[in-house]
Each structure stands twice: as structure tokens, then as C-alpha cells.
Image 1 (cartoon, helix red, strand yellow):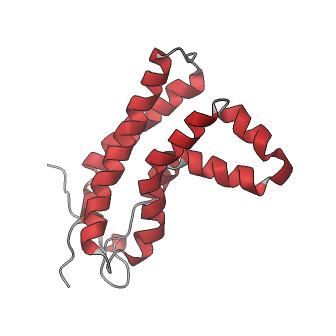
Image 2 (tube, rainbow, N blue to C red; image 1 turned 120 degrees about the vertical axis):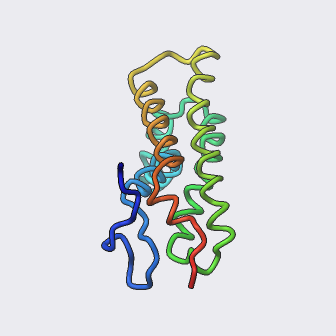
Length: 149
């Protein structure tokens, strides 16, 4: 039988479970439009070219920012999660909901005529893996569980 206990090295100095490295990767995956937005803003003169390369339809860009909001909030709140325990527990379910929306979005775009590309398929596969990981990882679940102080 597989042990679901958390290793002692997975705790920080305050006794809270550390957020796994893959959690940060999932947040980057969810906030991919935000990352592109920051890159475009940082590249000054080439920002429009960069945005047009990934989002020729500007409405899709603005809609793409919405599912990344929970990930951005998780980035900002992760260091103070012990101060906002109720919100932090709710944030896990918001991340799962946002990941589900991202997973369904790409097939909907294909349904409405966007061409099937390798990057689109890779994003769908990454979204499936991220959703399964968010829902099933015991260490991540422990990070969002109420802490007994």
C-alpha cells in the first residue's frame, strides 16, 4: 500500500506544508495569457507584434486573461496563506474551476473553426495533466487544508 504521509522535508520552518514545485508550474500554465501580457509590456516596441502572434483576435486575448485571475491571486496570496485560511481553501477550488475552463476552451475554439495545431493539442494535454494533478495530489491538498496552530 502506498504511503500518503508527507515527508518531514516538505514542511517549512513554521510547520506548514510547502507548496510543491509543480504547483508553481500549474499556476504559470493557468496564467499563460498574463505571462504573455507582461512579456509584451516589457518588450516595448515589439509588444503588439508578440500579442498578434499568439492572439490575432484581440477579444480572445481579453477573454484569455479571465481564467488566469485565480492563478495570479494564488501567486500573490501564497506567501500569506496562513493569514487568510478560508480564502486560501476556497482558492484551490477556484484554481480547479479555472483549469476546467481552460481545458474546455481550446476544443470550443476548434469547434468554431480555429485550426487544429500541435501547440493547441499540447495545451489541451497539459491542461488535462494539470487538472488531474490539482485534484489528486495529496501534498497539494494538505497545503490547502486547515492548519492546526
